[in-house]
Amino acid sequence: MFEQPRGHGLMLGLPVRDTHKAADFVPHGLDFGLIINAAGRNTLRFIPPLIISPDEIRDAMGRLRATIEATLSA
Image (tube, rainbow, N blue to C red; front, side, top):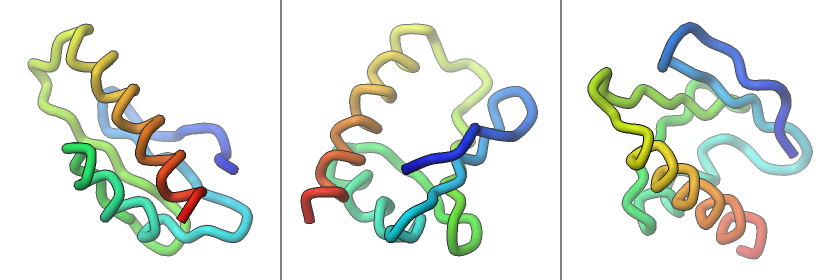
C-alpha cells in the first residue's frame, strides 16, 4: 500500500501505491483529527510542529492507522 517514507527531519512524505491516490486519505484524516496533505498524486505529506512530543507522535500514529483503515474500507 505504501512505499518507504522519504524526507528530512520531521518533514516526511509517504508514497502511496496501488489503487488509491494520496488525496483519498486527506478527508478521512480530518475525520480523525489528523491534518495531512496530498503532495502530488501519490504522496502524503506530514509536517508536524518541531515541538511535538513522543506521546503526540504515538497519538498521531494511531490516528494515521484509523485514517488508513477508513480509506481502505470506503
